[in-house]
Amino acid sequence: MIVTIWRHGEAGSAPSDRQRELTDRGTDDVAFGCHRFHDTCVERSLPAPGRILHSSWARTTQTADILASAFTHAVRVPCEALIPGSDVAHVDRALSDIVTADASPEHLLLVSHQPLVTHLVDHLLGERGRVPPLTPGGLVALRLDVPAAGCAELLFWALPPAYEAHV
Image (cartoon, rainbow, N blue to C red):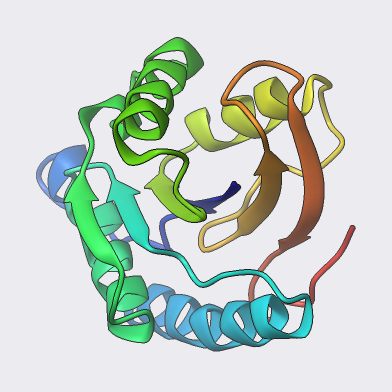
């Protein structure tokens, strides 16, 4: 199974953190990143995401909407395990539930916030700092057999504005 962890795009200010929306730059970065991500998946013979899980907060929902428009067959689902303040154990449980119910989907895309996205990448890879902390709009693609600590293989990571795939 492929799991791509994507940090929401750049967000502006709002009366509450939950309401912060993407800036024009954040929207543009994520839209461009979708095209580069799609091309990289095709080049590496990786399946397109079939499900997009995201935090219910405004900026992650907007990021998921942009991703869903690029991968039209993908189902977009809010996931409370991806909200700020959550931890990797909650995400592990959510992923395990999906794998059990869905017989190991080919490609899941998770849209969340810092510091959870970096903690999740480090947790799944089983080592800290192998991938730089994700800037707004950044992503990491992993291959894993089971959603558990140290069970992932790094496929690539990419950051805006260029979204060049790195290993």
